[in-house]
Image (cartoon, rainbow, N blue to C red; front, side):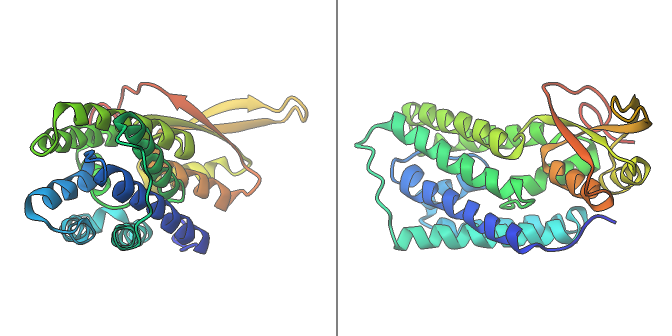
Length: 284
């Protein structure tokens, strides 16, 4: 079974990531009238047209998504998603009432860069420690499991829809700086977490390769291949594991390997394109 233990460090770092994300949203995006992708961007649209606090609309939008995603997320992922959603909502509420001034002197370029840095750093930390802030992550995970549509494609499509809708309250100039923020956001998440929208190849060398491979197949529904190898120092033959996973599954793969073999050697590879089952077409 997948490691379902709730770790205190995870909760602390998810809260920290949400703190940074909320600070950037309130002090940079809202202050400089920049949009955002995903559910957070939707809350900004609602704030402008209906004057509803994003701290409240974040929870209201995520409640049905979490209910729908209940059977797809698993116990730990569900708890972390609920926790991340509540943490983000709290920090948005907090920073609106205990305002931290970040003066960019009306320079939208600086605002776009800072929005990407705060958002990317915050989200990267959340993802790195196995959490999410709900929203489009839940939708993307459901579509990946049910339809075999890669999470990256779903996230990009949903972001594009929300950003297009954001043109109802911002102009083209502000949208261009929002896209700058989105680019920096994704690159920073890539750096911190190991990829926002791309896939990752994982090579695991362990004496317990069969046990690790079986759990990856059973719990993540990902294909696994054995690579025959030989230690240069020991001259002993071994079977290395190779698999390709989405970024959201990367933490789980590492924890599965570490659970069976704390001394396992794990290498994460950049995968710029993937063609095959579970990525470009549905799983069986």
